Length: 438
Image 1: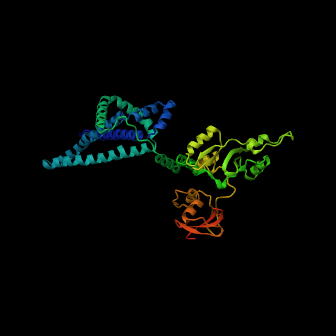
Image 2: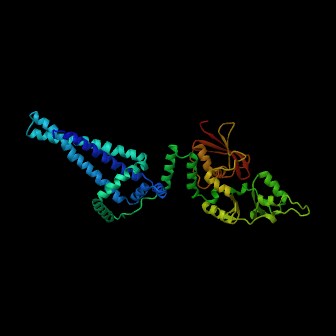
Image 3: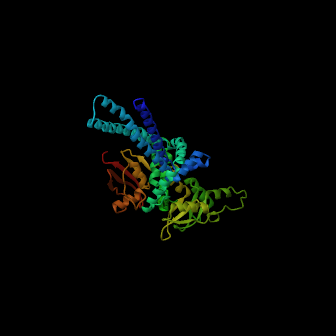
């Protein structure tokens, strides 16, 4: 012992702490690895990724190997290193004349102190630091430790097999399958990952926005995205070719519903490209076609239809405009493919008039047709309205009546004053919004 064994014990302790650190980093790196990324790497021919994927899918043997190594490292450092380092100190006390009970007391006390010091070093350098490093880049750490872990698993295979059988047996007694899949990834977890990626600069803000909208998209119905009947630009079935061309030039739209009698009786859809093919007609003796000669059959959909299903159906039928009907068969509105896509990527076509504008008197002038969720997001307030999609509908519901032209009622919502400014029939056309603090 006096011939250098303390130094050997120190070297052994360092080796054991290093081994413990490698095993701890291997364990946390495998837990942090994503199966999707490992599958992509494995399919591209990465052999280490295949090993990691196999361990990820069958973790029992891997975890048993890790646990064996960590347990042995801890036991050896406590039993061998602590005892070997304590002996020179006890010998030094005996030289000073300490003997009997006090020598035994100092022997036990020294072993305890050295064990505590080794435990501290093991926790910091053998557990916490390696795990934090592995969490920052699990794939790189996994690649580096996979080879020694595979070698260790082969050496410890008999003991690993015994531990795996024992573990699986206990799990079965507890009603947990040994091959039970991990909990599926939820929408909340994906959105959290997207947010963290954006904060770290890995994911663009626009990408996060689209992913959020995609999850919302699956919960939307046709009535959430349609153009209301009061905003429909429609054309009569008796209209002439030139009537359609004029309407197209005035509105810049490419598709129009065709009605017979009134808007509740939609009988067809006209597409601008169909008219362009027909004009100009070289033979002046051939009369220009009318709307009824070129219109296509209408595609009807109910208000409560899923937006996801409608998107697939419109692609299948090659229809780019659908007529939305209520439970009585009346026209509620229309919806185009562009309207559906905008629910995911945001506004594609720039509106001629901004829906929210600054007011000369302070505050904002907001179009009554603005979606209530857009108003909430803009003002950063919570507007509770499950029954209405637009600001006009929300205000009429809150007031309990439809204002007439000369009326300018107001309500307060979360510190903001909403005052009706302009009416268009039964529609609130514009609203002045101002903070109470202004």
